[in-house]
Image (tube, rainbow, N blue to C red):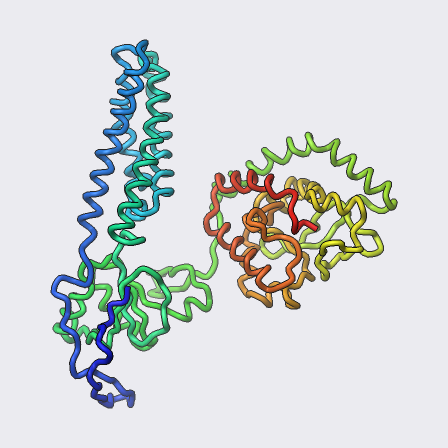
Length: 482
């Protein structure tokens, strides 16, 4: 949405020389400020929708349990007791896990996931309380389970339909965002209102009440305001936004260049610093991920020990060389480790530095090696790396140090390449299940993988690891696996 005036041009500006020698062009005629704001107010509408969702969820639970009770004649008179106790628990948990959130109005997957999570947690909590209170025998198991399943299905369907209706009525976002272009860098953020500060006569002058009033007309009904201005004006715009009562941001190229993640204030010294790095996962997440790795890896090694022994025997019989191929890779925290793989190339033609990526019909690959590479069997010894703590089952794939993309080292293609080492490398990853594997013939081959790795790190969850492992089964045999 571009709200810059539609007329071809504004009357010629009168250029006034300021005290510091800069030219400040002020249009002779500027648009009248909007009377009720640039956009319709959404806050009250969002609140009404949240209330409607809460009431509808309650109705869905009641009707679902009632239907199952009617369909199951053996249910007793107290079959509805469970849902009466479940309702307040569900709404309380849904409130605290942000089931009724602003983003959930247009993102049905997120809204459905949180609603189902609240439903599951409330069911577990109810049964826990009922067990110790010794009245869970009063519940009809058929009605309870059937009511939960039907309620969950209807809640997901309702959120899908509601999100489609809201996106059709309001657009892709349930928030009003405004970008004020005040001479700063161009900002390519979609789905927001845009105004040119000069064309609309907007100035961050705290000494001019009239200027502040004019600006307030444009900020009315906005949920978020972003200002792109010159560095010397950032303090002035920040002061104005602080008094607006709206979430305000000022674009900073410097913060973008150093990759700032946030800001920390040291109140005792009056200083502030930009946060440029942080641990990707908290202690609980790291414990969960490590326990998940070991819980799957140790049984997998036991089950796969015989097949791995047969593969080792085949490699040994083909040319008498070593079974395993060790190669130095970069792991978590930019530290070296030796990755373990079944040897797939002849001993004389092995490439310990990985300077030349394997290609289709590669002459260096043995007959056994060709089979185990195409079926990804050569990666199985990396389960040992997982047990040793060098790797994880899921994570950014570790690359050979000499690997090239389009004739450049990976970190020469994109400086953000090193950021992927903040997590343990993985046997598989999001990039691999998306098909980004094999030789990196062009820079784009690396960029696609890097973007997937950065997305994985920023949105990690244990369920996503489970999904990636399940998806890996579909790409074990792949046309890029050579």
